[in-house]
Length: 632
Image (cartoon, rainbow, N blue to C red; front, side):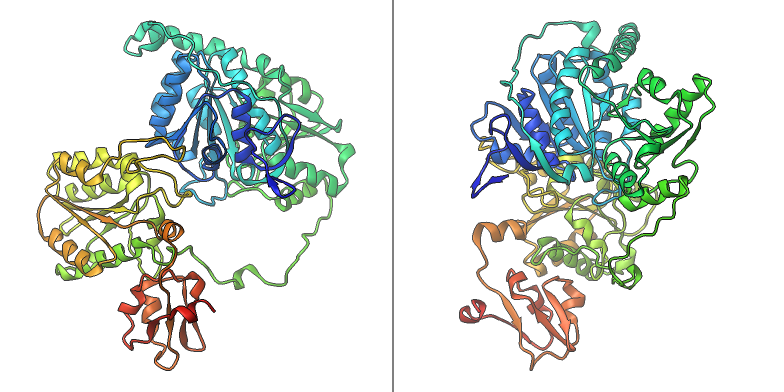
């Protein structure tokens, strides 16, 4: 986003400006061009940078753009704005759509008056997500239109178009992306910016907005189906769905797969044999467009990521047309059912279909299996490392084996504690599930202690109701809330504990301890996990006490703390004292420590000075670096 040496604001730069933008940055610009007034969401890779871009570059813009406590709340904020005529954007990753599913499905029946666009970012691979969820099925479930871009330019343009489609058909529009589109950087030509569209009007209309009336619901379902029948016609006005080439073999693709198909066709030299049918509208499938373009195809190849969603729809459509055209894709094994596609996978598949010999170019003699596994570690000085060590030590101090006390995990940085040497959490499923699952394990008859660990932002997102349930039912569990004062894993976003948001909005900070005490937890302790001995003692004490006991392990995220305060001290290893016992490595797992020549060493630039390794070095070989040495 730089032009020469001067940074250009991608949200306010004039139309015609060409910028190198990440897909998510382009979506943010598209929302501004589309006249968005309300933006809400919950952090989740690969969607987070959309709101982060607006926070960074949106100072002075007359819009509301803030994180919500979870995706359901975010969507309902957007819906509330849109039924009043304002334009709204809601952002989330694929599992977030599950959290927001209840109101999204209901919103299809009431519709909107202002444009409402819901970004759902899927993660084929997966790179940072617990499942390879294919949210295209979600559009069918919700009965809401879904469009998808294939590059940053389309990401911007389609976001802008989505607002227009939404207002014309009076339904929320789902904008589905995948990681490669969200995080790819490409040239984007900016368009004209429309002033924010704010509240227009809102009148009482129970049949439309109240779902308690069953007869009303039936009529609104009929209305919804009628609106969906208009979608293809509306979308065609904006140039979505394209055909490239005139070959007799038709390759249907969407999203980032389109880029792989174009590259493969060019490299294989089969441009004259292929007709590329690029679908930008994923639901409802553009039946008239497909009937027109597929009727004279000899064969149809469907190239798509994740499930055979398009393949299933195309086969059904051709059957209804009485066309006996062979369709191949994932169901026939031409393309894999799992993982993300790559240019090489697509080239190999098309080469096989066309009978072309294609050899993968090997750029390195290194075999993949020879590369050692490198599981992502907790950051140097991460307070969660202290917390999980204290939990393990506390289990032992309470008289139990570590293998006897399940540690039920949750979504967040702390899930990395599953890896050696901590080997801490036993499960990790969905936001807030740690407390519910720990409760279920106990009421199911587990005789020994059960511990639930959950982060601060995750607690506010989905942990409040499970904790209330456990307290109400008087279940004996220990809940450890790992409070590092930020949504850390997705890029350090604000939480309800902040007194000021990224936009400078003054808020009322909500203290976790106050909330937990007000809910009626039996025992509540706030400890600094850096004081590992104190936390160990509290864990041991609370494991012996009946009831719902809560420990709030409160210490700022190390990265955030270093950025705010700098590093006051660092440590190094005295080679003469080190005997190579590896205690510093095997106990802490700190990524700043490594072994070389049988001795432990510390990368000074990665050491944040927490001193945990010092505590567990039996030879006192780890010492603080003098200021003069640290600057070298």
